[in-house]
Image (cartoon, rainbow, N blue to C red; front, top):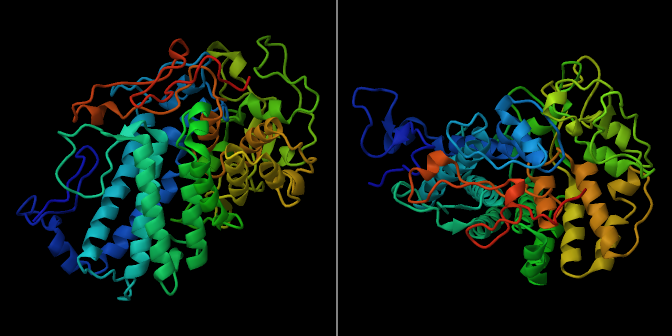
Length: 516
């Protein structure tokens, strides 16, 4: 019998092969023994790994705020997890070393997405062989479990391709990765993800109904909304393929029309869930609300205020003169004061680590005020999973890349668009420049940290908006590379601006890149 052991750095199995790991250990079973003792094993495995995959989309502490800093969406001088290294200007080269204090930026997303992917393989292989997906009430949920497992794989492979430059498309749990090169490109990883999103959509469509809250507490999606979420995630991750503007153009209208097709079938309203103990919460938004040391713990970058300013006088870097404190931004956007909170207290920001990185604003959109204003882990507090406005932006951008500027502008000028319905902003001109500027603004202001750790970063890289020297992708972690023939490698650094990766892609933003 084959063993379910893949990529050994990641997995410690309770259920292993047909041979016990320890003969006298009663907690260690073969897979067959485990299923006999736990009839709802595949249901539980689907539930746990769906929760894991969906939660890690917005994982903040280990890697999310590093990515957010690279996108100038968040600023920080804190050395916890070496966050400062990701915000510093000029950009530093990523330190992909096991001894590096910020190593979790590379290892955490790797483990966070490969592990659910491999566990989804266990489910799919078993169901393909005739196993039944029985839930904790002895009901047959095989169709739903198939849909959940396929979605897990779509999320996992898609995020691995969006974050890293290469990987292994592990669609079967055979052997180990120890002797294998990381031979699949980011494009291949994401293309494989799309096949699983399609399978998830087909499997869900074939069910009579779905109750997703049985798999992830309080995530109340029915069959229709599950399918919409799968399409939405597919649109987001397919659009994350290009590493620069030239690649986005070269992908062509056929590619971007596929993104548009997924987006058209995406969510129609925000997916926001009220927090309950043990339920989903958006770790990125939660951390964005946090105040410590008298100010924001992880402030919103000065970029957001610079974009919102209507006077044209707000700086794109904070004044170095320590006697100068910037006042509140003047803006016509009615959303700004709700989404971002002004303070003259700089909290943990340190002058000796670069006053140019300072900011007077914190991420505040999801604050509920009251007794617990700086957390989302209070019963009933809303936590965003996916915002419908992101679908509007994906539609507009896909149309823009496909050459339909009028269609792109129409999406952004729709009276229901957040920028108009909530922000009170005027319609934009029907020009490519206006569409590009508005898309960048909306990702910074409306999407921010609400929907996915990668959102502003991947949008900016495919539009040549990252600061010169910013890595457009992460290297695979050294710990994994040591198990393969691949050498340890990395990206980023101002002196490496324009560096190309293994596949000829732009791996480090060019000297001509940047929003400033």
